[in-house]
Length: 140
Image (cartoon, rainbow, N blue to C red):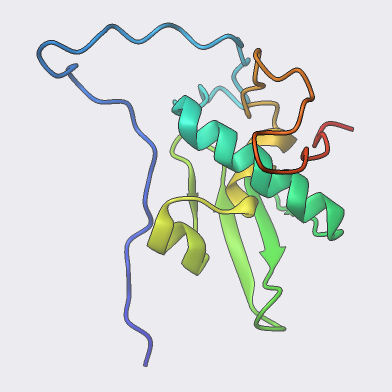
């Protein structure tokens, strides 16, 4: 019997911590989908999700749309027959172990990208990061 875990969600802090610098608005302005505003995605998470999506696209992994414009299905690569459900908004969430354990997965990044809510990196000049190879663009 598998233990039940709650899905992690990305939500903005209610009040900035004392002494913290104000957070600049994102460099993108995503539109709402089906009347739902996009979730707040911190820059570090957005960068990680972009890398995961690029890697997944290289491997040919894809999401399937469901009847909801903000919900997607993804087949597990490690457990054939298992399907994960991904929600792009109003709260970003996925039923996969990667999201539950680390709060990030390619499924979530691909869902945000599919609805136009994955922030782009304004500082990305296409150069490989120090000590690594450049990740391919995930935009079609």
